Image 1: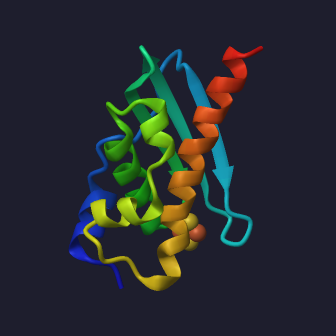
Image 2: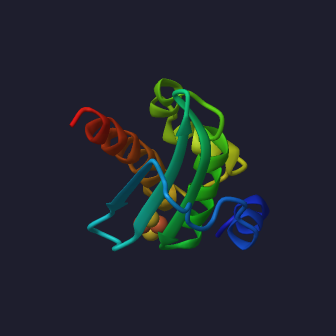
Length: 124
Ligand code: FES
């Protein structure tokens, strides 16, 4: 079902874990499958200096989390907000089963939610 690239990323994710004293944390879940994605951000001068994830979910969700983090690292918050699930799929090797597309969408939702939390916290 999964391509070699998706499996490789699932087995060796580079961005899995937590960040101590993060600047922002965000969590989203998918009601249908029950998967949950949590993102930690370290932000410096408006850019994502570091990003980590903890995902309780399927192979595609974990692979998508890692691909999303790779895309987001080094980007400004504005650029990161614009990352699409199509870009995440491309980063995963471009070959994700149709029924697993929502796992990549969870990645964009998690990132946007974390950035939103950061902005809300800053504007308090
Ligand atoms: Fe729902 Fe993967 S099956 S995120």
